[in-house]
Length: 491
Image (cartoon, rainbow, N blue to C red; front, side, top):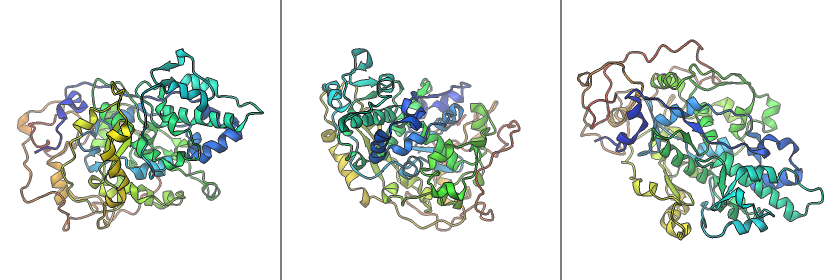
């Protein structure tokens, strides 16, 4: 049977009916990002000490709404992965740690979300916001931007700390975990910023990833016209792995590498690019590029490529490959890295059936005024704290990691998912057949006899280059395509 239980609610259903949409990522303007060069050094030192300082360099990246929209079309809530013709892939904790530089180990980001949180602003921010800047327990980002631009010359340590908290809170609400409004940030985060020496002890990376997963889950609704979450992370993730759509970067010099200009890796995408055209300017064009993606155009392990590896200044935490819940207050999502083992250099086995998250997805802060999330999620938090006992392991793959369609894993994958999204203009159900799952293939079975690496003769890829800028001619003709099990046609 198909694992795509929610297909009737998925955006692809409407695409196949001839409908199109364009998602608009939510990102509020941030004064501190635009004016990092004039930020008082006393405040900047505290932001650096908290672990958020490098985010101040993420200020020159424009969002590609077309790319984001097309990626969301391939997101599957059932598995928390993107379904491409070549296989499943997803944003993992490894990507968060290397692209954003945020800690992925530590305490979960959770706590109180109700009660009178506004009164805490007097002590933690030095001001009680006016009623016009508050809605419930959320504060307008515009008020934070306008209030904390200039630090008094004779500011005390408390005032310096208050400015640092305000700017970190702005980064959380505008860049890392923006909600669908894009204009406010919840004061629940402010409580975790009270002790600036303790901020690094939280797993901000897992909270950011949980928020992005939840935003993607909402984004598969065709009627959704905007998307929250850290779309900066999503876009940089795509540029790191999908060479068919990544802009061409100006190379870093050895001196710049030694100065740390290229790390976290997201910083390098803020630099001047030779060209940003990616072979298509509309959703149907990028959709066709993804449908026709070649093995050499997708990198399973981009951070092992030499020109990227030399930029990395940290050792990735083993938590990056843990099958664990990702928690951010009311939000709980699952990090199912067993489905994308090749992103860690391992041979891919057939994964277990995905965990049903329908009940978890009903949990949010609406109407939960009496809920104390650390207690309510105690079981999930315990699983997170035991993360080192839930790491994936496997045999290293050879070549570039890609598999032929006749391999055991790809036969399972083809028979359970939707590989291609571009609608066929004229077809009938007779053009397709209803595949069944081979009875001899079971979950966790490894492809010991598979032919690994469809392009084994291709050397490690050069730095990402662009496709020709000529207009795409549409997806090339293929043999009869297999719809997922349980459907008569995937168009």
